[in-house]
Image (cartoon, rainbow, N blue to C red; front, side, top):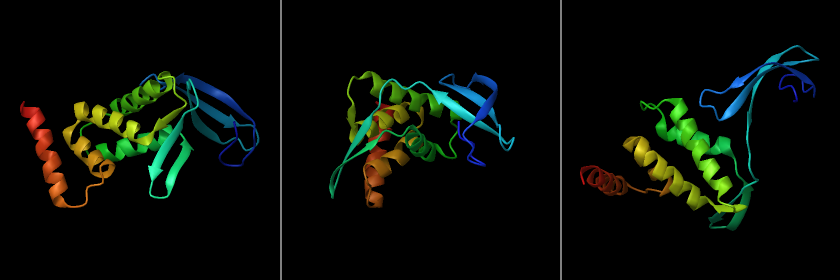
Length: 156
């Protein structure tokens, strides 16, 4: 593993243990050149996934990035009473579903819908926050209509 401090490509594992949510192995490493210590996380990846994004410039393809998905879910959940472990579990669950679906390519819209489904059961405010970006709300009325549909579902 390359040292993030000096760039040397040899480090020694000093400690390994499961991460808090059990979806990864957390490793403490020490660089053999500069002796700096750093942490890495090792996750199981069943297959390489490509995300297909349709935009105004046409269709783009890019590798699936778990950290990007985790960042967007974390932003939606910011300042909400949601444990980081639950966010990690949501993201890991989505990744696992995508990897086991048997497809090498997945539409970005499908990932967005999976996040929406997960957040709906986790926190209604985080759900609306994510939806505002995902559904590209343009004005306050968009928020009102969507929030009204969320509160109707909660009452029904």
